Length: 227
Length: 276
Image (cartoon, rainbow over all chains, first blue to last red; front, side, top):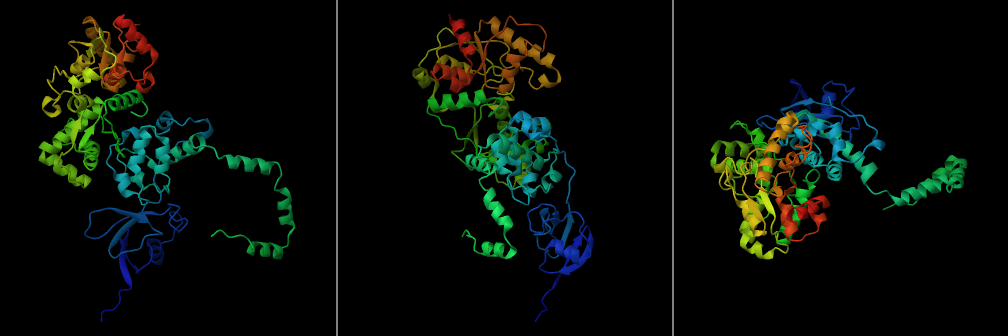
């Protein structure tokens, strides 16, 4: 009977470490003695702070994952790219028009796209990155907003782009333009805001504020829970 | 096409639909690159067009139609490379992780109309004969050359647009600048040079008595229409002619509403005046 393998060998920036089998890259690195000051955020696969690139032995293909959500594998060579220098436009959203001209004014480099598709290949969220740059090039802000919606701003696309496009910042500009200037306004929200301003809920809030901790707990436990 | 050349997009779809030809837009597409690489081994410059072709091969009936002269030029030449150049085919397929061998047939709408409708049939379907209208057909430099790769008729004297014009009842006029360059992207580097080119095209067409110039390229149209007045600094040109897309002229002959053709009323007025 062979002994169960309990550790794997990984190479962090070239330095070999024996780490427990079955843990995430982030936990393995901490086990090996690394301490995260940057490049670590939610630890739940959402914030995009811990973008990591790696290769496995015998495979030329560059792989990516979030360190907090990707399991270590034996022989993995990895490094974190938690930040990538990016051209980040500053603008007053209220004053912008949702047009191709606006996208080109702040990010003229989108027209340099060569169509190499490396951004799409690297995206840990598996977004159609090259395609949303193509839709941005033709001024389809709504499509760019929708296709980039699940972007976690990890920046790995920009790290691979030969045209030096910062795809994730183009995406967020498109989503902001869409949300502020294109998407239909929610009527019910405006009505509710008016009701709040008119004081419709003041009495109820006052009543809650006067309650003791026990009364609040009782009320909380008896709340309606959506199934 | 969706923004800067919306009138070309709209008029192409409307005119072809009126002839029973429905186009389906590719669900995903990128810019083709707009310039075919001058270096034979610049495969990076061919990747975008190669992907568009490989994706198109998986959809529809194997035919891909594009109306912009640059798109047609680049896609056709990349497709030619897939069919005829082993190294290009292998390199591009390896990079794209595809198995494309040039199966797509790339068509210009002029070819689609000729092959699927027929200019003789079109002649009977025209509601408003454009009798008396003299039309200069401007191909520019990218539709017909290089001849072996483009296969668009005589490289210096293609005639497919003239055949369309004749079917519409109008009179095509020959002119010496019909396959010369309009100045193209030099409009960005050297606007005066492009303006001189555009001016020469307009004058050559005007000398032959043309009332209107038609083209299939957004950049040709931009240069012909905008440059001779402004950038050359020569003031209003005497040889100023309305410049339309061939699809707009086709739409007029098919009596489609001007709004579906992206036509301002001043074009229609100019045409009426020309034929009066």
